Image (cartoon, rainbow, N blue to C red; front, side):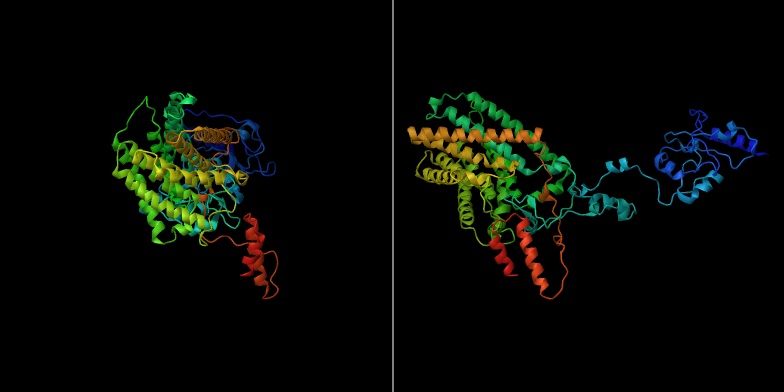
Length: 584
């Protein structure tokens, strides 16, 4: 049998192995792709073909002749088959067609034998497909990869086989001690990473939306729903009849508040379902844990701001349903404050803790307006006791408490929330705005004015959604002033009512506009939530910029690193840093 007959048989066998729908095509003369020339005429590179043309789902059948006789025609020499098709049943492909194209020195065997040796590293993967299987964020998903590893172990697979080579995918998220948050984070809200720390998620790309969606988003609900209560009081109070406020304003704000609560709650519920590990880290955060009261306080605000056209009086069962989760959270948090552990009040005290106290007074206010007595007094007593302890702790700034910055921050307006709501709650319990209510009201007014005269100290802070939680204290002070003007009606109280209501409304409007700009124009309303991605290990060490020459240089190194730590963390008190370095 001569070589021409061998070529014809090769072509006939190739056509028989192809599916019936694939036609036998004759390729054009494209050097190095559709035909195979002799080594002396063409530099053959099968590695490029393997990486760009071949995959487990698309294979090409190549038939070529070895060094033939010089009298063969050009058509016979260049006749070949080059196709690309999806996978077909096993019977339609030969075993040789399923094997990937080899690389390197094995290309000669392919040309000579027409067979594809097995790839030592397994099937090649498309980088685009690998990007869709990014598992770096799986550590914060609900199962944290634990269920997948357990199933893989049951199947007999090794743990290393279930993950890629990226080491960040194998990190398991565990609860962190409260000291770790203080060591790794800084700022009034503990949401800024210290320069000496690193996180377990990529910093150079945007995380999934649910991971960036924090519990502080419920502050929007607090700000808008408290406005609905204020405009309801303006429309129904006797001392503000001269303003001629329409009840429709209260109705519109209440409907907007309901829509916001539904939207924010639904999104965060999705985060609980898909990224429960991230929610757990927020719960252990010494500042974020206070915002878990915000959803229930927002629902209490909705019950207080119900327009008269919808309902004049709510059923008392609603009060018990709303206060039960608040009571459970208080058992957890207040117990930690009192136990003296790492989360004792002197360690974690921050103005954000007022959110965990103000819920008692809001619940007492709602329960008393429904006609209840014992329940509202119970929560009023709990709130009063813990507010006094919290107020003293924050006022005297214990040496063990280093969470408050020197500069003022909108978080300080939470000082005004508890006494303002407490004055109205006690007025509803007693039936009149008596001396007890006026004492709490005057405390709130003094704190309000002491912060208002220092408005310049609130400049220069980065906007965040947590600022919304600081709007309802201003609105609460305005509502308490309306109640006080009903008891003491004169020009001063009426003017004070108008001023505080206008201030609260402008503040909420400004925050609303700022939120819209950051959400739709700047598109940075939800940045990467660094607070939940801090690592468990020790902070990375600072690289020394000089060589050690003597034993005394160790002390010098400690002084320099300690000084840079204060400088990088934006501490302005350089003398304090030098004194601290001298003690090392």
